[in-house]
Structure formats: structure tokens, C-alpha cells
Length: 172
Image 1 (cartoon, rainbow, N blue to C red):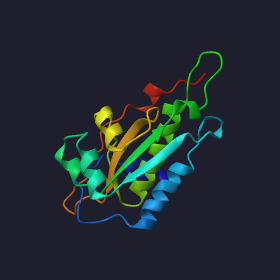
Image 2: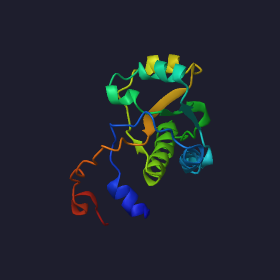
Image 3: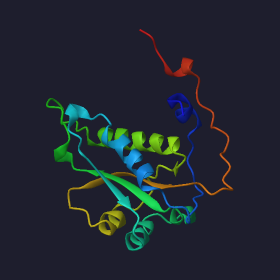
Image 4: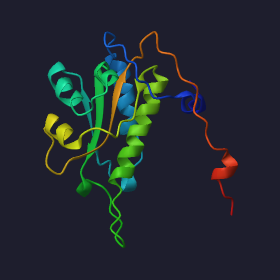
């Protein structure tokens, strides 16, 4: 699919087919898109966790109570550590959140291109998720998404209205 079409037509999916697994080669292409994402000073401060085992899925699903979240065959988690990311010397800005967001966005767009559904989730319980994944103390989760094929009955919702370019862009 053309990249502009992928961006234009991607929507959050909240209706996954729990019986249709994601093929390994498809998953690998999605993860590769994240691996290739740019990061400040090319530090690549991310770690991608693919949760698919029933035992870990059960624990991870406890951090977000929506029923549709429990149907996706994979939960993709992006983590990182502040000390692995670039820090601007004069004000202490750390690029970790930006870098991880770019990597997740690359994977979400790649998933759409593969016919997979995703839904960026921020309302999870961080402490429960940290424990469920047995993360190191300084490892932070910045984003999670279910990953799987939408049910055959899933109907893409109408695209939400976006502000016109004229309201968002200033040319100087």
C-alpha cells in the first residue's frame, strides 16, 4: 500500500480475531519497522517486547480492563531506559519518550500495511504492567498496543475529522 494511504486510512482497532495468529514473517516486518526508526544520536534506546504466551498475556491484560484488549493474540510493548537515550546538555531534555514514540509509530504504520490492527494505549496501569513483564527497576514502558487481525465483522469507522492544514502550518 502507498504510505500516504496507510497514514490516511489507519484507525484504532478494538475488535480482534483471537483465533487468527499473526504469522512470524508478518510480525518480523512490523518489528523491523521499529528497529529502523530514527532516534537522537542513533542511540536506539528501545526494547520491543512481544507478548504472546498465554501466561504472560493473562498478566499483561490485567493492566487494562477493556474486554476487546483481551482478544488480541499479541500485545506489543515498547520500553527503554533514560540513561540509554540522548540527553541535551544545556537543559537536561532526554529524548527517550520521543525516540520510543517514533519507533512505536513506525510499527503501527507497518502493522496497518500488513492488514493488522493496533490501538495505541496509554491508560494502562504502569505498576501492574511493570510487574507483569518483570522489568528492571529503571526500565520504563512508553507505549503498548494490541496487535492482531481485526475480526471479519470489523467495520472501519469513519475517519475522524482533522483540522485543515491552513490552521496548523505557519510559513515564515
